[in-house]
Length: 138
Image (cartoon, rainbow, N blue to C red):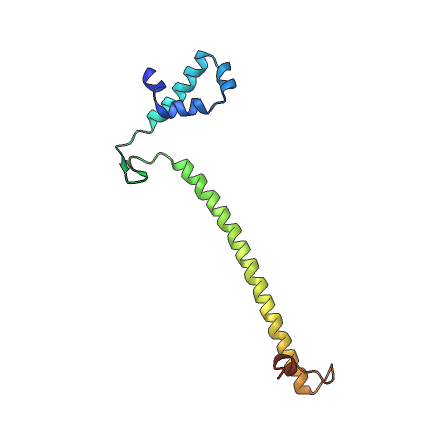
């Protein structure tokens, strides 16, 4: 128990609890929190646990290598499900944008073909004004 109370992780969690709430906790409650956090920490042992801290000129960098059995299957399934739903939403948005752009392009092309047909038939809706005048004003 004394070893757990000196654990920096446990101390950081307990220190994260507001002081006024900490004062209301009994010794038994603090011990229970410490035990619960300690059991979670002890359950996460790894076959290889290599942690290095490398001081450089202005900063300090750390390197961690952990190797062990993956016990987070449920967590990974939840993450995969969330990513799948986010991907589905992204696909819907992409398809909506693609359809809007396609529809816009088809509309412009349709109007162009209608204009060509109108011009070929000699129909003049606005006298003395033609598309070529708008495109090439010189």
